[in-house]
Image (cartoon, rainbow, N blue to C red; front, side, top):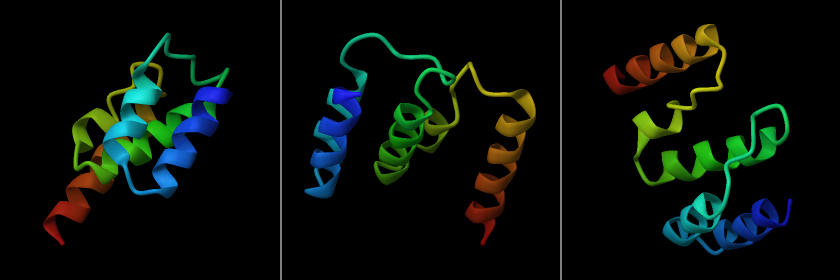
Length: 78
């Protein structure tokens, strides 16, 4: 909770690199336990143009992961 809150404050300043460091410090919570963490992490990775990492969560439902990959492909072609 505090790590997500801290990272959000950093994101508001536009310092995505520092926000990523905060998010990646410590244990990674499960998607079920902290969907906010994973949403923020994906958003930060997207802002840093690290698209493959933004959908590489091993805990994602395979159908959701496939949808995300398709959307990234579609956006890349546009």
